[in-house]
Image 1 (cartoon, helix red, strand yellow):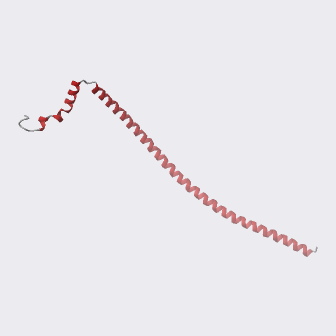
Image 2 (tube, one colour):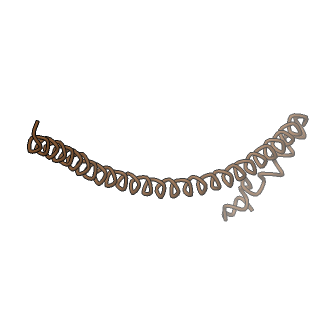
Image 3 (cartoon, one colour):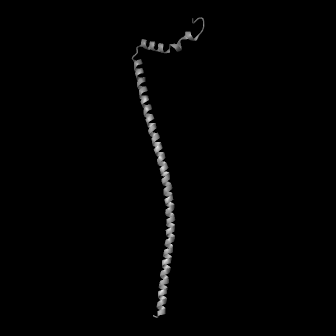
Length: 127
């Protein structure tokens, strides 16, 4: 093998290696840029989803506080209902214990102003 052939083989190997290095390094840069842009897009999407999540968390907290207030109001109304039922039952039990004469007197006193016929008419016969 002559020195020219050796030089030619070395030059071919050198240019082949140079070509392969350039081919892989340039593709890696393209892939790196492509992946970096995809990563940035995903990070933007994640950030927007975090913002939406924070807004929804705030809304959930607001609704939970409203639920607590409404539950307290319901409890107050339930207490009022129980009190009214107890008072009504006491009155019903008191009326149940009345005899016939007492019932007649109770209703006569209670509804007398509505049923008094002499106050309603102005005729000479009613006076």
